[in-house]
View 1: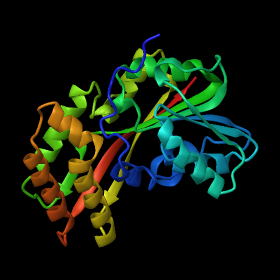
View 2 (view 1 turned 180 degrees about the vertical axis):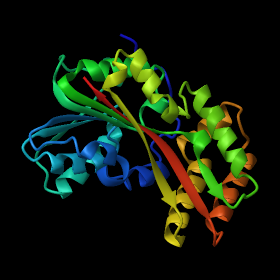
View 3 (view 1 turned 120 degrees about the vertical axis):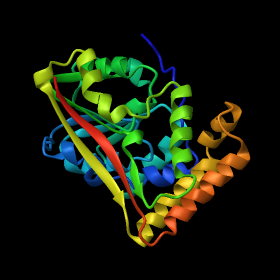
View 4 (view 1 turned 45 degrees about the vertical axis):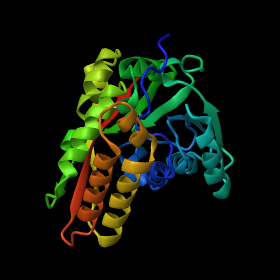
Amino acid sequence: MPQESAVYTHGHHESVLRSHAWRTAANSAGYLLDALRPHMQILDIGCGPGTITADLAALVPDGQVTGLERAPEVLEQARATTTGRGLTNVRFAVGDVHALDYPDDTFCVVHAHQVLQHLGDPVQALREMRRVTKPGGIVAVRDADYSAMVWYPEVDGMNDWLRLYERVARANGGEPDAGRRLHAWARQAGFAPDALTATAGTWCYRTPQERSWWSELWADRTVRSGYARIAVDGGHATPSELDRIAQAWRAWGAEEDGWFAVLHGELLCRV
């Protein structure tokens, strides 16, 4: 089976996990929640620090959630998240979504948030997700679409950030505009067109607290994370160019009228 061939663009620097730990089922998986039932067995792929995983576990008290990660070092934080909430129906495992180590028809729901954009073969990943989902179950995926991100006001350097990020992500083997492609990838993976429900969702950062949080984590990520190292080592940017982009993020965050929206594609696939 094909294995993971892309590099996770962001890495697992604190500035990245700071963003991941903000995510909840409500703000990141709302399109799925109405389909959940208390008894369900759920596989949460790319669970990261476990905040969405924990929310899903709380919503299926008679079921079980398995959080899957490729990077084992992140699972310590995920376990702390669920232990701190007193959840006993969660377990974690290390694995590759391109070749899941589970039998056919194991889970009621297979969920992946912001995963497919980073994969070398998202269609194969969806085939695997479909394989381990029970008949009548759901594969649920949600991914951002970087080209569709918008902000106000225009700040010198912000467009440079977007162009650089897309270059680095594609050089790593991923597709930063995954959101608009999810339904097409699912059809290639064998899902029937009438089994797909495609929607869109957003994150929006507007208040002073939201702007400060979003701009600071991206400023830090730009100069201190695995993404920064890959950008420099790959010849996509110099350290001084990254410093300039980080300052652009901080300048945008200081704008009283600042506003930033992240568009996501969302897809429910009935098996």
